[in-house]
Image (cartoon, rainbow, N blue to C red; front, side):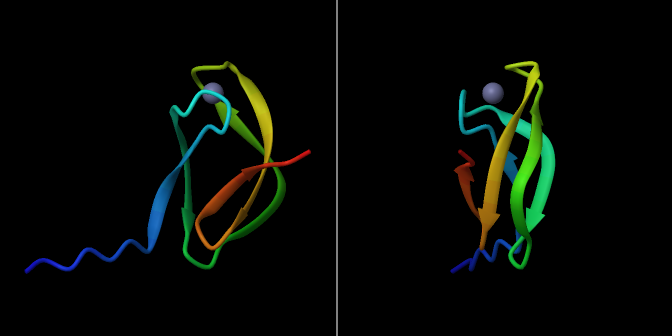
Length: 57
Ligand SMILES: [Zn+2]
C-alpha cells in the first residue's frame, strides 16, 4: 500500500477554488496573507494554519 504523506500543498483560492502558485508547508502559518489568484486576478487575504486555508475577514 502506498502511503501518501503531504508535507506541502498548493494553496487553492477560497473564492473560486482555483489553484494558485503559492505553496505552503505543514508548519507554515500565515495571517492575512495576500494570496494572488490568477483566476480572480486579484489578491485575497487568507489565513493558513496546518494546511488549512481560511479566508481572512
Ligand atoms: Zn480565485
